[in-house]
Image (tube, rainbow over all chains, first blue to last red; front, side, top):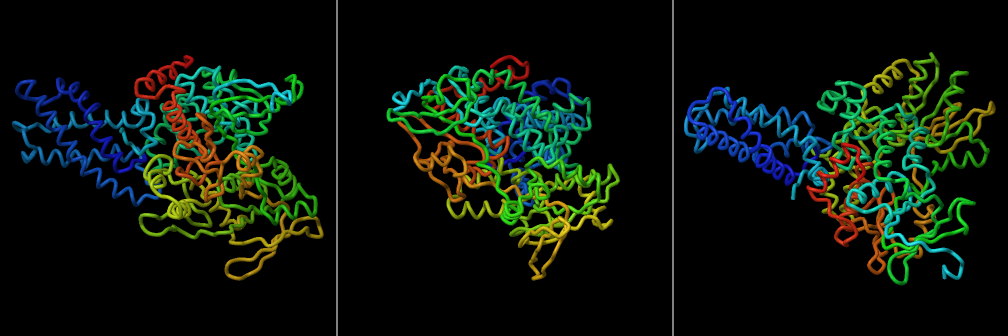
Length: 146
Length: 485
């Protein structure tokens, strides 16, 4: 990817609002370690997704800063995959501390890990190709959707 | 006037002059945007869109099986760049290694780049799919002139014997120029040598066929002076080194850098380009973000001197730092048969034994004298714009003007400034429009960028459909399944 800052922020929100929402809907019924009603699990999952989006805007600022040290001002494909580690850890820690607003109760690590990993890999695959099928100018405009 | 001169006039709404990859990509985008073949003519000397490119790559030591300097997602046959050439070749070769490469590039491996042959084959397939051959009209374009009633006349000389008249004129609303390089220019001292001594054997340009140099070195050990620091210099070096290894040759290589880069260079930690051993290293012809990211946005924002300063900072001759070739150079330096030096050549003369003597001076004030059997000029200097007949005419009579870089000034939609004619428009893409709002014009992705921006402008004018998500998806499905547009 060769994003601009605006492109990063737009892509992050767009992806979570589309691919993220769909993949979450698909994965929730098969998540391990869940307790309570499906409605409750869905609510929790979407709150986590929202948290990833909000925190993600901050992360994008950090990535953009780091990218400035690269001559090509690019963001290699593998970075988009590996950033699952810091981002996932931060969300998990906040979740574990009960600091994600609205989440009704404790969430098992296995539940979180499967959901987060599934959505992350899905959106990473989507952004590395299929997004261009719909938005042919996306890659030529630094990842801006609009 | 045309009528009086007995020149027949044909009407076609859109004409693309050139017939190389630039014209091909433009027509590809227009066909995808719903324009029928009957509304487009490509005027060209070339039989195929890849003909000139194939000639240049082959001469400059990139035969079809070699990998070119281009990104996996830059596919002239596929405006979406998906699936990328890496996926294409991985599938074709049944090689997951290529997928791994594109996954971890450029951190753990070199950037993936496609084979030249992959580009030829896929462009051929796409040309068939969009019925490119139906739009192609062979001939030499003489000039493009504005028409009193709006639009343009393009004057074409068809190949002898193929048309009843010597010239034909095409009346169109829109013209697109993708004429490539105006021509190649030689280093001045080498041109002087060639003309003075009429020697075109020992002093060669890397963009001309020069296979005789490598053949001669196989028969008799010799010394070669290589001049230049770009991709072609590194390809020529690799060929010399490969031959040395493969055939057990004893070729000595003197490599002259006008600017010898000793390490990372730039204005600060945020603008530092890798370099060393003479070379400035960069994966592609521009930093990657110039093709569509941060640098592209910066260029668009800046104007005049500030834009020129940025162009200077990120421009210049570079080559990709490829692992295998780095190892060869290291061996060459250790084995004392590869000699990289900083030198400016003052003159070249024949030695008494018929070999060549290069008289040089260096930045530290020293003078040198290097005897060699051959000199290969890899500097790839481009000729000036007016060397091209159509561009020269356009500057003189068509209202076009030059930008600060000496190329055609164009607006953000690639319309050539000053050439509007009634409701018609004249666009240009490729090398002729360097130095404007978009730096990477002379690349696959650059030509696609121009074509998409031109098509967007034409959609606004009502000539073609807008390429929104629905059309884009539908057309991509057709591409994948190989159905006509």
